[in-house]
Image 1 (cartoon, protein in one colour):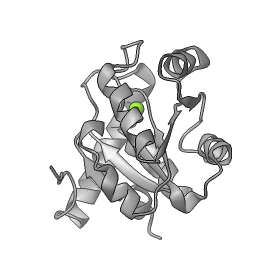
Image 2: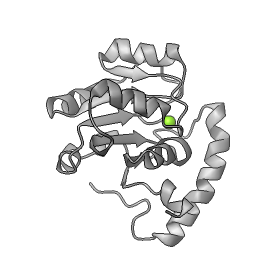
Image 3: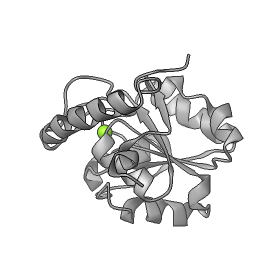
Image 4: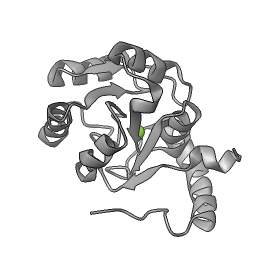
Length: 176
Ligand SMILES: [Mg+2]
């Protein structure tokens, strides 16, 4: 697989609220691993939003397990876990497979039944693809990023440009 392919999302969406759970079910997905920062809430928002919570509850009601897999710290992720009742992995070290593997084991599903939802090509999408998981790219909720993310965004823009050139029909195209 060419290197660029490892950064190529399987699905693009604008944000989690636009994710069609029926599409995931059709693909046999039973576990959805959600990034937190700029995917479920803005990076500087400490509590889960009612929209994010509603989304997780809807997925659960449709027999898709939800877990949070974040590179952020224990304090950040535990607050999310406590507020939502869903499980979470902190310090996941995405794009390494460690955090994803831990979540998949906990959920008792296979890699083919697992999807990753995230806003970053370098961590979420690359991590998902190299672990053989379905990769869903959402737009960052806000322009503000954690300091650690800013450098990633620089490389991300370059990779996105290569993807735009090679796959002009699919990049940034959203379904409604
Ligand atoms: Mg993120």
